[in-house]
Length: 240
Image 1 (cartoon, one colour):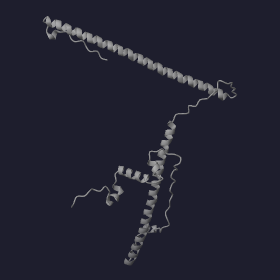
Image 2: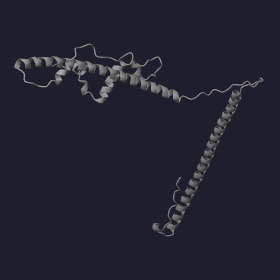
Image 3: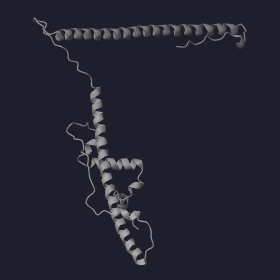
Image 4: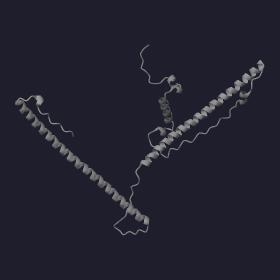
């Protein structure tokens, strides 16, 4: 066969695959793709924050439609001696009512599936709503202060206003004290680090001087005929 360019379109067999064969991750991707394709559910899988403009999906309460009901009493009949014609008639009757029961089972499955789908949508909405509430709770509190025009005379007849002024002044003093404490701590750490750095520079200089003196001593001893194994050990390098 002649060569051809491979197609990126999926085959019908792939699109009509049995969902029961999907992996859990495939189920999640399929669910998100289905929800994002709807107008009411796309906002639930998007990264945008949820607002009050998006209402919660109303529950879908469905009942069985008016379909023929099987005769359930047939399952309770006790076996008895019957003729061939009676057995054939009973078999046909059982087949009819079993078919009706199968239809009811399928309809009930569809109703339950729809209810579960609604619960999934509502759960996604609640998760987004909880995330929005969590973001609101993390927001900083109000930093408003009581503004007083001190250039003019003021008359305060309410004790709440005076208490607000005192609380405002105390809060301001506390904040200033905290800032000063942080600044003092930072300055103390910086001063201590400066002293440590200077001390380390001095220690390295002393070690370098000791090494030079040790090398000079070893050279003099070797000239005097002292073997290497009898030479003094090198000064230990200090640890920082």
